Image (tube, rainbow, N blue to C red; front, side):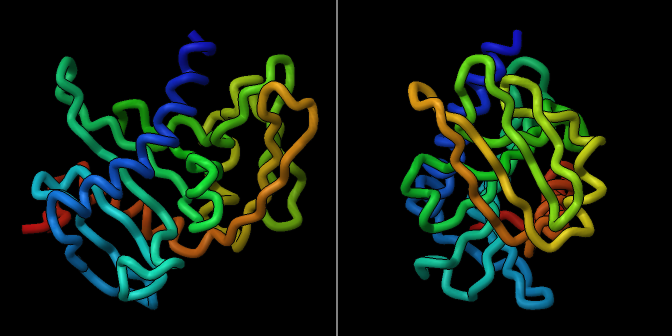
Length: 197
């Protein structure tokens, strides 16, 4: 099961970036709201795709901070929500960063270090100067363990190992917009986020 989950995490991390780009071609992005310097964008008519940006220009190089996907599963009819930090630089490396998966529930279930895939190695997540969390070999950790720190922290440092190289890669991201992203996922699940038209 975990091997397939690693594949899903890596695949979804890449898909998430692609879906945000695809959604912008299908429907022009629409600002749903601006709140304290953060812009919430609806990227699809269905309301399944959204983004949180730090600038009012969606197509600016540094616009996207968090990309959100919440499609409805064809078998269970549950929203399969997930979101990923999308830094303009790391986006060019297939969406590495912090990945949050809800697995069809109303709350985050796993927090993952995207693109961590070295067999036998474990990734790490550190919020601010707190003690780091060590993930499972698939690069994920139960959300309940790290989510409280992510909701109150200002930055996260991620350490991942990618096959075939046996060396670590560290990335640091600001957590600006993280709580807004959690709130936006909730609104998509409730059907209260205004879709793009």
